Amino acid sequence: MTRIVIVGAGAAGLAAAEELRRSRFDGTITLVGEEQYVPYDRPPLSKQALEDSWDNARLRLRADADLAALDADFRPGRRAVAADAAQRTVTVDGGEELSYDGLVIATGVVPVPLPGVDSSTLRGLDDASRLRSRLQPGAHVVIIGAGFLGTELAAAAVKRGCRVTLLDRGGSLLARLGEPVSRHVASLHAAQGVEVRSGVRVTHADASGAALADGTWLPADVVIGCVGSVAATAWLEGSGVPVDNGVLCAADCSAAPGVVAAGDVARWFNPAYGSLMRVEHRTNATQQGAHAARTLLANLDGGHGIAFVSVPYAWSHQFDTRIQIHGLTVQGADTEVVAGAEADGSFILAHRVQDRLVGIIGVNAPMREVRRWQQLVHAEAALAAASGVAPPVSLVR
Figure 1 (spheres, helix red, strand yellow):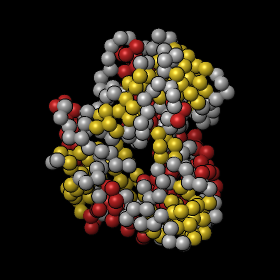
Figure 2: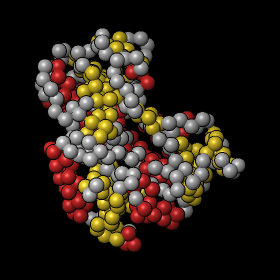
Figure 3: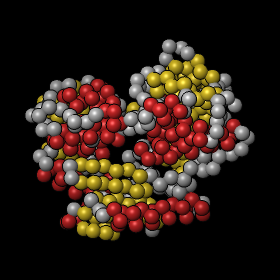
Figure 4: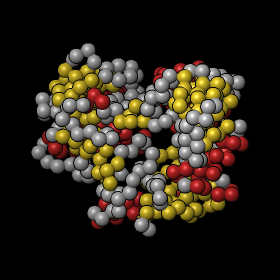
């Protein structure tokens, strides 16, 4: 075992490379990154990175010296186009074929495109830089899609002096998080002048505006599509690596002989929730990248990896509101405000499935109280994973 290829140079891919070196792997690590940049942090792209005062250098996950210490063959600006699990090769654009003993797939997700506005989605640093130059005071910005990305971009655009129309196909903003959270976010945006149109369907959009199903045309200076994402697995077609809404993995993140996956692209069986799930959160990417590397080394040495038990964590800042999610928010769950009060704008909402606490959402809640409920979520997850009888739940996107 001398050659490991990592496809994807984000948080998950970097974590895998670092864990390989920590585990004393002294062979060749080839890190293939589609973008021209060194590994960087993505969550700020829809928040702080849109401010004029922002320095993109702050996004870097590691200094040059730290990256050099990995002694990795870093290939920035190269895209994997094919793989062959039987022959253990990865082909990159230009036709170069990379042989491997072990492969880490960490390619993340790609935005669902909208005809006419493909260039105004937000996936990477170049997209954020382009949007920052276009979000000028007085500009009318139409945002299609009102999940976390859409609402965060709306808040950032308002902060830059833009007039914002937020189009939501559902009935209310972030309704999947529970009515108290949805009401709070909706009132927050309304107070800041965001025009929210819920229950609308966009039939066409281009750089000049968006057409709605009722015949309304919304002219705009900037149109941004935020209608979701899909796992970046097109390059794995015919590779022998199983793919279904992500790279299909066992509980230890292994997908095929000598192949593991991590981060947004990995769909693995999480014993804590008794389900296959794919988690698009920054913290999960780092933790799973390191775990996948350990599994790869164990499998290559003839052993078996241990299950990756994960309690997802996500956060959002919108205007003066901090939202933290520990665990899962589940469609059809029983929800209850367990601390604080919605009327005060500071509360914790619990999600329960079959009487089990599966997740909590803190809205401007004191950190001490959030941590207390977070510990309860983790304790429930650990108990379910240990017992092997976790009730299946589904991660809501």
